[in-house]
Amino acid sequence: MFRVRVSAFRLIVSPEYHYYNQILSWSNARSFCRSKHSDLATVTSMEEAQLLAQTTAGLDDAWIGLRNDGPAKWLWSDGSGEPLPLLWIAGQPDFSGGCVDTIASGWNDYNCTTTRRNLVCEDAQVPYYYPQPDLWEWTAARDHCRSLGMKLPKIKGMPDIAPILTPSLHVSVWIGLFWDRWAWSDESTSSLRYWTLGEPANLQGCAIVNVTDQGRWYEEQCETEMPFVCQGAGNLRRVLIKLKMESDGDLDRSAAGAQLLKQLEAQFRSQGISDFQLSWKGDIRRQDEINENPAAESHGPGPCDKRKWND
View (cartoon, rainbow, N blue to C red):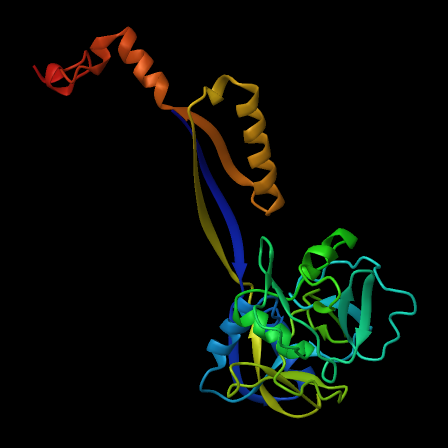
C-alpha cells in the first residue's frame, strides 16, 4: 500500500478593522485612517463583511471606504474583480437596468428590482439548482445564494452557460454580473457589495455600515459627519492542509505516480498555495525490509541503545 502525504500551507491575510467614534466627514475620516492605519475599511468577501459587522455591533453607524465616484463598469457580485468575457446577445447591453441574466445564446441587461428570473446558486464545484420554480429579483437572488454560502454564477465562456440552464434550457436565470460605479478608497478591485434593501440611493455619496441591519450598507452624502472604521495592515494566518491518497501499486517508481504528483502540485498552485511538499510513502517497503532482514523487526537493544552506553 502506498500513500501520498501532503503538508501544505496557505497564507491568508485577514483585515484588522478599527472603529473610531470621532465625528468626521468621509474625506476627513479617510485622511485620519491613512495617517493612523492604512485607509478606510475595505471589504473583499462575505467573511470580511461579517467581521466588519462584528466590529461595529452595538456602536453607531460608520463610514467605510466605498465612494460613488469611480468609472462605471460591469462587475461580478462575488467580489473577485475578475475581467469579463464579452457574451452579450445582439443589441445588449442597452443599460436599461444594471443586472444580467443569461439564456443559451448569451447575456441580457435588465432592471435589478422590477425583473424576476429563475435562480441558480453556484458553489466551488458545480451549480446548485434551486428546487422551487420561484422567480426572484436580482438582489434577492444574490442574497439568497449568499445565505447558502454560495454565489450567483460567474460565466467565463459560452460553455459555462448550458450547465446553468440545465435541465430547463428555455428559461433565463440571473448571473452575478451587475453595473456599478462605486470605488474603494484604497483602490481595491473588490466588487463585493453588501447594501441594505433599497440601497444605494444614488446620491453620489459614500457608504456607511448599518449596525442595526446585520452590518449591511447604505449611502449618505459624503459631507455628513459620522464615526468611521479604519483598516489596518491585517493579520497573517497560516492554514495547514493535509491530504492522504492510497494505492496498491508502486506509485513511487511509476510514471503514473509522478504524473499524479504533478497534477496535485498544479492544483495547489492554482489555488494560490505555494509552500508545500509532496512525496510518496510506501508501507510495502517496510514490509520488504522486514522480509529480507527479520532482525530489523527486533525490539531488542541496538548498537546505540542508551542502556549499552551507560554500562
